[in-house]
Length: 379
Image (tube, rainbow, N blue to C red):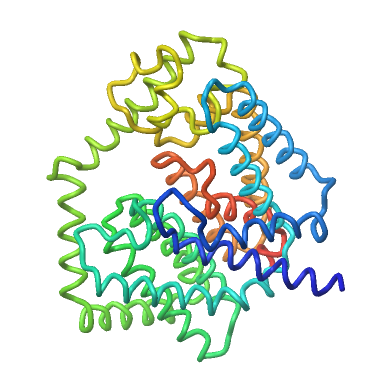
C-alpha cells in the first residue's frame, strides 16, 4: 500500500509541473494542475520526511505567510496565503522523491506538452507567443524547468530511441522559448545549455563538437529562416524597441523601489508586510497611502523585494536561509556533470526571481525543492 502511495505521489508531482502549461483563463478559475498540486500536497504527509531542517524552514516561511495574511488590511490576502501554502507544501516532497521514477513519467509528459504548445503556436501565430498563459515570461519559467529535466533525462537514459525523443523535446522547447521573445527565458535556456555543454566538452570534447556542429547544420537547414527571424525580433526587444532591456529593467526597478519606500515610511508593516499579493493593483487600492508612492500601478516584478514587502522581514530572512541551504546542497555535489547543470538551474531561478513575481508560482518552488534532492546529484 505504501509503495502505491509513493507511485501516486510521483505521478502527481510530474503532473503538477506538466499540467501547468494549461493555464486556461489567465489567473482566475480552476486549472488542471490545481488537482495534481492538492493531491501531491496531501500525499506528501504520508511519504516524505517531516522532521528535517528543510521542513523547518518551510514551516517557518509558511507561518510567516499566514501571519502576514491574517494581519493584512487587504481583502483576499488569506486566500492568496492559502494558495502559497498549498503550492509550496505540494513541492516540498521534490527534495525526497525518487528522481529515476519521476523521469520515467516526465519524458512522456514533457514531450506531450512541447507538441501541444508547438501545434497551438502554429495555429495561433502572434508577435510574442504566450501559450495558454497571459504572460510569456511565466511560460518560459515553466519551460526552463522542463528543459532542465529533459537534459537530466538525456544524461541518464542511454537508449538511442529515448535520446532521440529527448533531443526532439529539447529542440521543441527551445523553439517555443524563441517564439515568446522573452529575454529572461532565452537567457536561462542558454545558461542551461552552456552549463550542460561545459561538462561534455571537458569529458567528450571531440564527440561534443561533432554533435554541436551537426545539430547547428540541421537547424540551419530545417529552421534557418525561423531562427534568423526570431533572433531579429529578439534583438529589437533587447536594444531598439520602446520595451528594450534598459527601459524594462529600469521600470521593474522603479516598481520595486516605490513599494520599498512605502514600507520604509510605514514601519508598522515591516515584520508581516502588506499581505500576500499586497503589491498587486487591486490590493494597493485597499492600503491607505500606498498609491501615493506608485507611479506605476503594476505588481512588484521582483520576487525578493515583493517577499520583503508582502510577507515581511521575517519571511524574507527565512527565504534567504532556504536559498542558502539550496546553494550549499548544490555546491556539495561531487559529480561535475550534475553540479554544472544544477548551478545552471539555480542561476535560472535567480534570474527569473529578479524579473517576475514567483511567490505562488508552482514550477519555481518545484525546481527549488528539486535542487535539494540528493538523488539528483547521483543520476
